[in-house]
Image 1 (cartoon, rainbow, N blue to C red):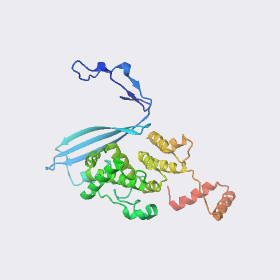
Image 2: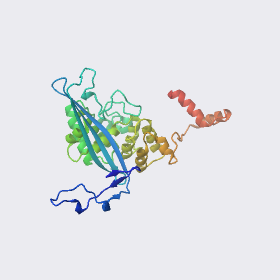
Image 3: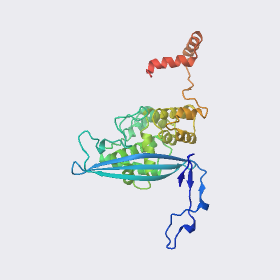
Image 4: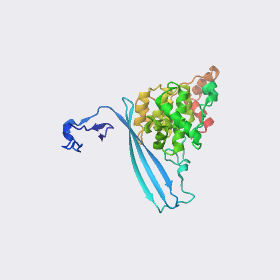
Length: 329
């Protein structure tokens, strides 16, 4: 299997002649059976880091696992590949300032550094699910998953397994957000995606836990739209794949331009260091920043009057006013 420059995969198949006389599989590839897949694939990766300090303060084992998920964009099926590197060092200076295992984020990042498009609340806390304005009377049923509490971790593992088996709440966005919270809390509680999958059991996969944990890590403003049904949970999974302000731009485009899940998935695949979400959306004729507003008639009249007198478009007056209110840079 070979990754092509255009993002597709070249797949090599083996014929029966690739087995030697002993019946063992040889490394020879049959060039006749080599072909290119016409389907498109998304490739995503994460680094999952474990740091274990031995009984002696100078014994440290660092294990880094690169989790690679290849997604068939036509069937939305995943293939997980895990590459692990282990390093033992008995000379590492373990002082109080060194990051301990429990201080690391579940995604391996620095917990003190959070871009504005990331979750700001504690992992597992039902901020949206417990808001009566969003979930009504069900707000009292909101479950909190505490990654520092063993009993809560057990509950999270059970919830993740039920969530993956789709036994209940398949069409319930609030239930799905609960499942996402359980995924994130379980990863944080046990320390890695691999251990989270083992703890949940069943057919739970690394890619499943990782995708839904990312949804839980979306900012509250986006999660509220998921709970309301404005953004489909499956679309939220792809929004969570991008980072920074691109995440917000893509989320608001889902609402303003009524994007489908397939469109969100393709746009998320195009966003990288060279292409922003706004640019990917512009390629499809969608302008980030364009929104339709309904105003009370008196405000509408005054806005139109001032725009005419000041020789400015109404949007510029609204923009300048909002800048003063929001104090945006």
